[in-house]
Image (cartoon, rainbow, N blue to C red):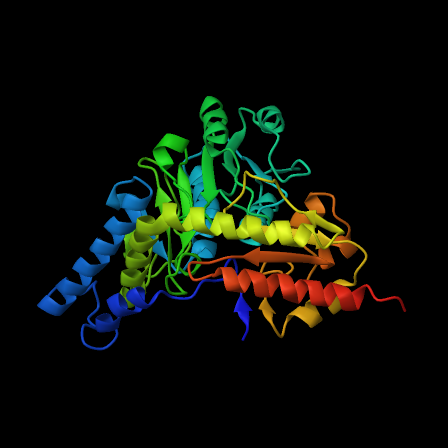
Length: 380
């Protein structure tokens, strides 16, 4: 039986979320934008309940939530939306700042903006993946429009000091965007307390359905819509709302908040058990910090083995990866930013534990890696 330990790529939809979604597929199928008859009003009410559930998880008012198809769309709306709105109002600030370890859903839109008149600074990280706050302070200037730093890295699980980053942005009058797709539902996040102006999330990273997410926006921040053709979501995201998916997102967020503390503690214990067992195999290097990381994340590189052969030996028993699901097999830019070589990055394993991960699966993972290494380390 395959042990699924790739929960950073996606999580299974919780059965309770499926139950919440079920009526809205066929029986209660009305368009929430119609508003002229009861079924449509009920659909609209269900959307607003979900909006409130998402907002509550980030300690924000319901009107802060803009529903999207996921964190990628939310990132694009935040980054391009802020930039285009700044242009429209004649804002002189143009500078953008981010980290080399960000997800492509942030790096690519920012690279696009850099080709259209918005200078981009990509800061390096320390060997453990954490941002050197002095580097950020030195990079900030009166021209800085926005800083984008993710809450929890999707590969190495590193947790950046969001409060310190937010404070630096405030001091310089820059907006702070945070891709929190891997963090919402897994760690406590209060946007106002942390100084976050814009935050992106995705349903399928927290046991909800794929195809839904949200951008949360602090009041007063202007955005230019990136999708035109309707007045939905305050005119910022045209298109008929997917009521079943949004109901599922709301339910998933609420369930994740309910068991967040217990789940994190349990998975941290299992993660540490996994790391201790892997260390005993020898030649195993931790990628990322020892402690300032997601409790359900572990990323390692194994010295002296061929990465392709390693993953080929593991795939029949373990569902793990060597990097982001969006990288499509390319060497990890995150590990490269930590100073790992292409060979080290290829011979890396990202373990993402989940709500249903058991101690028995950890034992199976250790046995599978041990067996693979025993074969790979045999003298030719």
